[in-house]
Length: 378
Length: 106
Picture 1 (cartoon, rainbow over the protein chains, first blue to last red):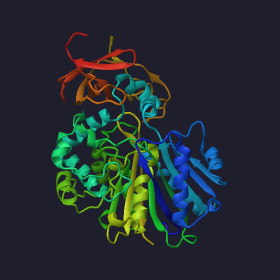
Picture 2: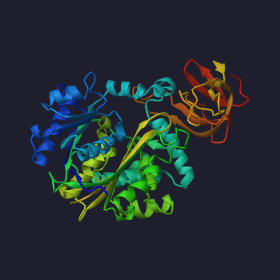
Picture 3: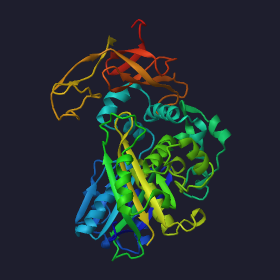
Picture 4: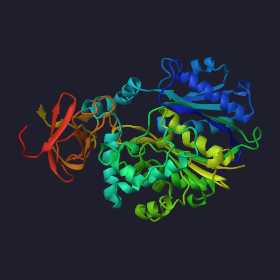
């Protein structure tokens, strides 16, 4: 069990679908930095490590951002891993343990809207550019529709199961002032929503927004009241992209993760899994060990429709929107805030343990990166 | 439009990989031989009806995942009405990979 590193504070800049002209990726990141430093009771001069994940930082890099932010880090990383950019946390923990840095600021965010989003979707990687973009399918929903169909057939479930995920996250979003979708959703409304690619409908897709997330990683000695990081694991290209896409890298991570944490999935008070599409919410929960008998149909009925399992308690990206790779830190920020009892009306009573999973970088048919961490209130 | 798509086969161990990449995941070889694959079986089929960057009334794009007979799964444009289990032929037009029901004329 990791016992010497904590997350001192976490913050999110409110997301918007229509950012002002003078809002840039760097300005959003600077705003997130200001909020998270205030939350941690730190000054920018206390920061000696910086990690950033942003698609639209170019032509700048992390070192340019350090200058913009007035930081003088002795530890620096830039991680374009999108949904799995929580990978930065893995590096930051080791840097603090090794003494390479004492107070690390991790940032993720983007201002990618309209044409910039089309460009990102079409040129996400070389495989996408060469093999998917020529099909003119308009980004990820098409391939995730194929995955969802496979998942439906494997588990004998219908669109209602995915609707349950969206409806539950909408319920959570009613307490989140940052959410784009803050109204509850009914199953009827979900089933009648415009189809993007059967079986995926409009409400299965994340709104594209501008925004940013931030966390401060430091030693327990420096921030005794911080949220403890008990374990972390990552898997990249775990199956050489030769699997069915329904088993994620979390299937490799989960065993060692729970062993390192000294806890099991049944002991978690809340769960955060990356929600680019509802099918992956269910797939990741299975891989994390939250569906021990593999009966996804019963899991949905009892845990999700029965509202027994608090998950994606901010409302997730499906309601808050996705600001580039900031979605990869979004769940981490929400869980840290929950464990610090900062969530006001959305607070899960007594929340002291959480598991957070990231999933990202669609290589061709599905995403190739997974990261998971177990957090505990100090 | 030409029949078939190229699926590289590892010269060392015979492993088929798609999309093509540099090093064989099974044996570590960097040597590949091109092989033209002509047929496969539909795994899933959908139609993309709403697309970023396309007008709302644009024609839906039939999209399928196809298990090529050589092994790898290929994402391709389909034709309306394809269902899981249907046998299909691969075609290539520039960078666009398309499948049609086996036996249908190109």
